[in-house]
Image (cartoon, rainbow, N blue to C red; front, side, top):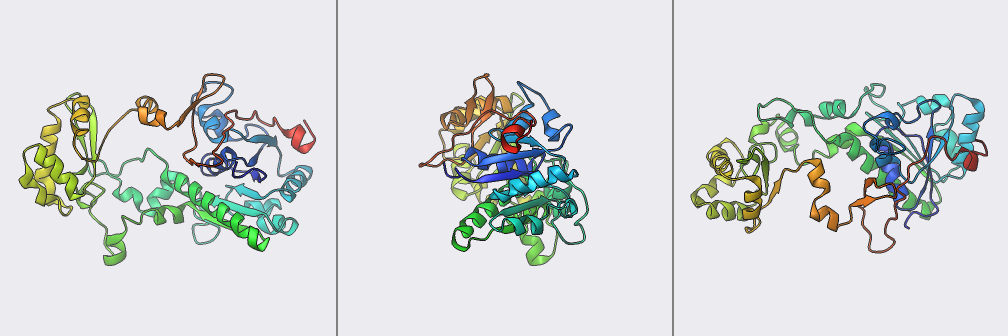
Length: 369
């Protein structure tokens, strides 16, 4: 596998860090999860369980090894530093300054192992006026401006279902670590990576920032291309109480559907987003309420139109496309897992679907039980 021989020391908890290091483990890296005495990673106890641990925990920590260390204990801190001496990557998600106070900051670790790639993920980064401000995903989405345009039909900000700030920061961290490892092959030197969830969320808003960057104004979400101002980028009710999303605004898709529905004269209204598209949206709302979701899926599948039926998660996990791509795996206990989306033609991932018990690998790695 791609990352065989890479050793990762993982001090992260919750979502951004563990999702990153799970990707490394899926592709062959040895990931050593360092957990605090007591409860360890809090997600061990969050949400439903279908086996030795919660689904939340196993989704993020499969294939890793677990050791328990009290980082305030001098002997345990030295044990961690000894692990870092042979590590290629170090990942932590503590508040800025905590690692330095514990004596395991980048300066200390890299002095012992100059080849290490040390990645810190935090809400607002290692400097700036918000450096010490605690936050999780939705707080960061709020400060970044994203929540201001993530609105329901009532025009009020809506709670996002997917923790985008967590996930984008995780993926940026993954990209940065792999870049640093690649560069290390040429220089022999590791690097320090400061990932701010806030930075990442603003960066990920590239398609939304036009009005603010060009005109210093807040857009009206209901009038913009991807936040409600386009009839062909909208969610519609169907006759059976289900929902359908139109998700392609290119004029070829507009003409194809409006032509098929007998209203081609409405197509010119869709050339630009804005409230002038209301007649098109209202026509489509009335049309989609005439048939069931299944009927519309069958009909739209015969046209060249961008759409997606809104599925529940249980339905999504049974989706024939997802199954055909091998994205749902089943382990020996009958539990289902989500496969890695990184699909290589050569050296594909071989995810180890077993999650570690807390401290399970202490004896093997640290020479203690």
